[in-house]
Length: 310
Image (cartoon, rainbow, N blue to C red; front, side, top):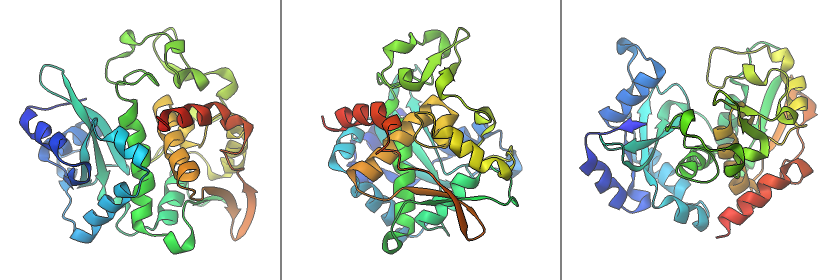
């Protein structure tokens, strides 16, 4: 949770049209991320100095999302803000006043992740971050056709994931992540959580046994705690036996919803590709089956269809 002393600033941001809530991250937001990441002072995060084309790509990425998504975002989203050195592609969290009243949800994007990457480059780079480099296997992820393989669509997919986090705040899908596990209700009271997860006796959210698999706990995206790349085929084969939409989704319940939301909007609502393959050199050694046409997606697909049709 970001506790802000500048309530008027956030109230002003919330009153702007949705597509105008975009800009450089404030010192307050950068200080929050630095604290979460334990960033040393001499390696501190800095504000992004971006040209209008970059900001316009973000605005267009949001504007091109389905109207149903934009309607849902209008009230909770305080804005999308940019910095350098966040340590991941983006971070999303709630903003509260000093008394704990929730003002809304904010997304911080790392400009560095998109300065030199197209959509497919970014998606493949992210998908390989849990694995040590130099193995015989690499993950290739196509989220755009060749003619649409540009930066704007990389940012669009990333923002759909982050907006999934925005929409779980104060929802019935998952426990609010900022309240502490002692205030969580029972597993069955959260419609998305109960599909693949459970709240353990100690308050931890853990996968149901049939949705767990070897090395799942070891997967760390955007981290230097990586697992051997030789494990890539086996890990993806194990994931395909679960209900998770992606490997990132398997890491925790909140990214499970965010990934399912992003992939559903991207593939089902917008008709865009999502084709993941495992390669060894130029040869494809494994292709992950289309998630949304598989039986294992049935419960998530129905939940999201109902949510986004309202």
